[in-house]
Image 1 (cartoon, one colour):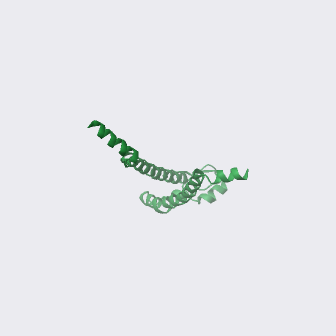
Image 2 (image 1 turned 30 degrees about the vertical axis):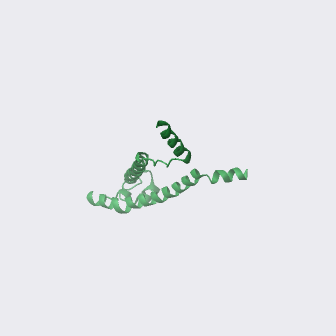
Image 3 (image 1 turned 120 degrees about the vertical axis):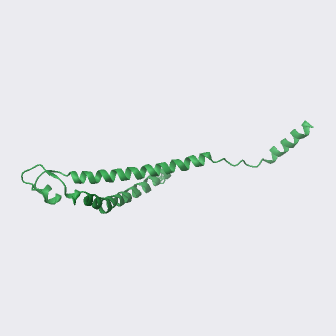
Length: 138
């Protein structure tokens, strides 16, 4: 059983998947920071200073407009539409980057397939047979 587990754990696909998972987690943090720290401030500037991270619609009379989203959620239910927009933008950026990665990989695969495979030199037997054929023609 231990031997089977070792074979399973050391398969190339499992290791590749593990690396992809770790890279995906790091990319998620990177893209989140990109959205929150670089994109959303520009959107807030263009939209007259609207802070999307604290944009919500209160669904209770206890919740007052203008509170921070965390405080508003403590008082009652809210529709956090600003957070939804931020996550939507994040998704679109991640999807576009993944599209570019897959497109680049497919382009490399096509280039490899289109490249002519080198013809190996003839074997000694093939050379001898060619010489015999040529002699028989004469």
